[in-house]
Image (cartoon, rainbow, N blue to C red):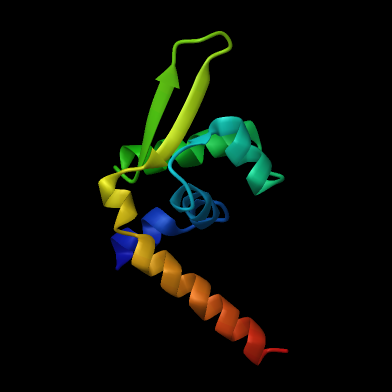
Amino acid sequence: MEIALNLLSGKWRLKILYYLLKGESIHFNQLQRLLGDITTKVLTAQLRTLEEAGIVSRVVYDESPIRVKYSMTDTGKTLIPLMTELCNWGKTYKKSRL
């Protein structure tokens, strides 16, 4: 439990995973736009942590300007049931509070 909480805790990680789980892969700038007010430095640090944990993979394209895309690893995709349940719980909770 502690490992999962440490890996998924913080303001941004679950949001990052949510957007990555919705598609094949996503460009860094696109992810930053989707997240809103996250700084480049913070997003880079969060993605690096998830990459080091084996949850996210990073591909750098040798172009000018350099493009970087992120996607979920097979290990990261095992979070799909958890994320689905969290989203379902959130919807149910929101309805019960109205």
